[in-house]
Image: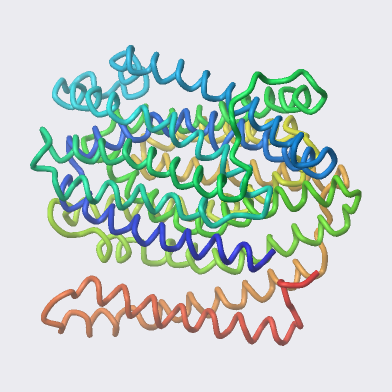
Length: 508
């Protein structure tokens, strides 16, 4: 399991590195003004719906059902099942994309009402959204095919596919002179990336002889079980999108630049979430589904505890850095071209607020595996809606005094409520059993985080003074030296602590 998480994490790291390069280019070209706000909304809207038709409802209902069919019914039956779901998803997506393109002005007015007061920004957001919305069709099919590949133990193509998004957007920006504006070029880059990602995972599935075709969904027990699980999963994913829609709606009412600042802070915050949390959850769900289907819950729980410990060990240093030096991070990564110091300060405040909820967000994907592996998609909905209620209520309270950072802090609070309820309900049902290995891992991680924080506090001033004496790349050097030194100390203390406590997360 650890090797698979590391494999996915490695490819995700490449994706995030190229993603940083993409966002650096976007920040330098678009800055944090009208064009950036319009592009962020145009990119965000299809991704809201993607959570329903991609990684969200369809995927969490599909992967356990497909894994169970593969385990109990055999490859032929599993392939027939996936072909039926593939055909159904394609039809629904074509209808949704067609309706969205037809009624784009109404969609933008509903989800970014603040743009209506600025006609230039509103018209640009409408034009860009019409370009980006077909991405929903491509990327949702990508996630379904990726679910099939993951169930067969093939993770590389799906984990590497997002790299194409970053390369495609940067390539489009490089030839932006051929488009009405750089924002139009970036939007076309997004849609092209969806098509390229679909071709990549489809080719890998074809090589493995598991590419779903198209067939009329059957009415057998496996398909009925999928639809039974799909309803609560749609409700859960839809609930999560309520909070995300609230972010977009409220941010559109804030001064120009707030939407873009939220986007850039979220991109940094999503590094450990995608690199660690999503990778662990991707590996854990099909593995736990197989173990539960084989009536071996003890092994499933031990695997989940190791995934928790591994995820926390890798994400904890990010949380500490985001809390202690968020301004340095945003300046070092993005402050150039049209992205100025004011934008960096605002994005840094948002990043620190997001960091409060980072451990919970990283662990939620692994926590929901306790339920999805048993085809229980209802309980995660209960936990998600509780978190959403807290999230949305706090957005309304905190945005006034804290601005965009209040939106991020509300998101963090909602994540903790969601994760806490998932954990309590799983333990109560006997579907999760935290063990001594996980407890000792938390002790080791806490010791390493204390060492990291101490290193940052002691080294920040001398490192900044040295970087200021350099002839160029001062901000970048300041961030790189401090991150390298404190990161090395964290890893060293973590390694020693694991040795002292005799921990090996790679084994049950």
